[in-house]
Amino acid sequence: AEYMGANESVLDRMKTLHLKSMIEHKVLKRVRLGQVDDLIDSLRLMRSKMMVINKQDPFNLVSDVYKVELTEEMISDSVPRLIKGFSIEIILSRLHKFILDRLSLQDGDNPDGVFADFIQFYLGEQEDELTNSLPGFIDRSFQNKHVIQLFVLITLKIRC
Image (cartoon, rainbow, N blue to C red; front, side, top):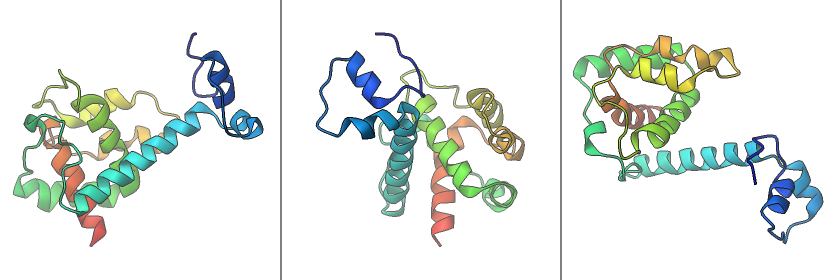
């Protein structure tokens, strides 16, 4: 069975895979796979944020080469500029997705790579202009090895 994409209904996908449902078919016909993906991403993000707040490591399976502390200059200048210039929830969701999709791979991206370049390539052409403009707000001093600590710092900052 070939994957039809985010607009395929859950019911149609289940039929393709010969799966039986215990939920009413009318509901499953209206729910799209893209919606399920977005829900899963949101729940994973919420879980990771809660783990950070509870002093746990949501990225324990990611190599330590991506867990380098931020410099004082990044903390005092670059992070506040990023937070003031862009939606915090969008920043966190894109950082989180990048960490899970790119840095958790066995052969993840170059830790010393300029994060703004990598995230621009990773985001590709998103549907919304706001997301496409994110790389322009990220200081070029941030490298891929700083992304996890950036996520942690922003998560803890908005909690206060």
